Image (tube, rainbow, N blue to C red):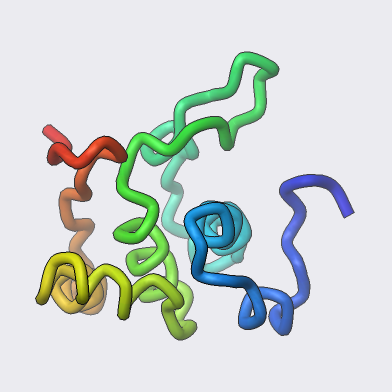
Length: 115
């Protein structure tokens, strides 16, 4: 399995909720057909790495991105409880926006908001 190939669905459920685990889960979720069907290019969420890897550093908050991707994929979010504890209502807002067919603005990875 390549570095960014999709793990089995059971592996998705078993990944941890550490920052590294959430970032890896975002890459795995992004590669699901339900997300690929959205037509969102990786550079919407990630900066390309120096070696050309499309999944370099995240442009957006990883906790918010995982909640968004999980909502689109229809799978439980590992980041939702963490995001709700940090910013009450934010995870629910993101999931609700996706349910209404909207792509909400996400916070920058450094804590600002996207333009």
